[in-house]
Amino acid sequence: MSDQQAEGTDGGTARTQDTGTGPFDPAAPWWADLGTWGAVALVVVGGAAAAWMFLGLPGTPDTPATGYHQVAKVVAVGLVVAGTGLLGRRPERGAARGEADTDGPERA
Image (cartoon, rainbow, N blue to C red; front, side, top):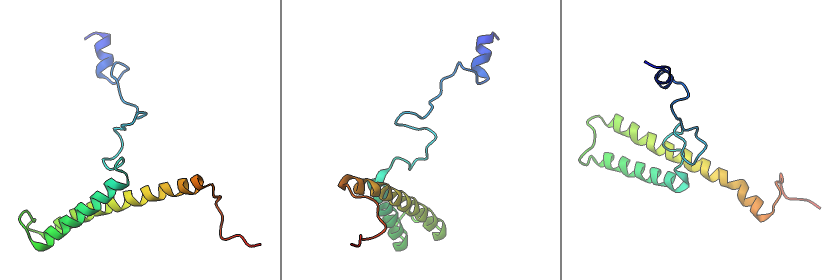
């Protein structure tokens, strides 16, 4: 094996790797770029799946606890992403209106 081939196989500079500086970060979790509406969709889909399981419609798992656990994870991820998305927008709204951060109403 030549030196060039050895560099490519042992993690040298011969291979290319995405550093995550672009719009797609391969190290990010699957739900990182959902946004607020994607999070709302996750909550709605999770609620529909819970109703589906509660009614015992076809496709419901034999042990309901495992199905409800999966549904709860989907809803929880949706709620967390929605909450962080909405809280992330909050300072932008105040800055857009030109309001300063204050602790309460100003008293004269």
